[in-house]
Amino acid sequence: MGNVQYTPFRAQVSALLEARGWAWYDLARTIEVSPGRMSHIANSEEHLSVDVIERIASAFGVPPEHFDLYIILSLPSLARDYPELIDLGRNMMAARRSYDNTVATVRRRTRGA
Image (cartoon, rainbow, N blue to C red; front, side, top):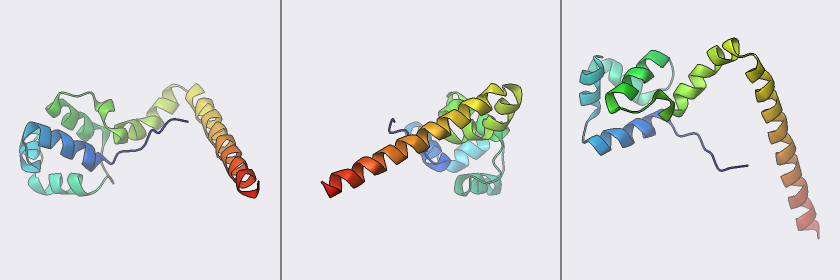
């Protein structure tokens, strides 16, 4: 399995802000939300909508898929539109469990050798 890791939304946005020389306030003004709302966005991934993430992506000129959270939030509608993704997800989860079990078995055997 690869070393793909979830990157928190705040970290991804912070990197883009830094690259552009912006503060969170500048982003709030650009996407037309209040500083209070932007503070909530910056400090919590809860209650973030796909629409807000799309507006933030647009402000930076990146695709919304740049943000891991966008992909996660999009999964329910994707699963609804493409039911075969549910089977794919199940297969991926089963493969991950099998992989984890195999790694654990090899580690146990290696320690016991």
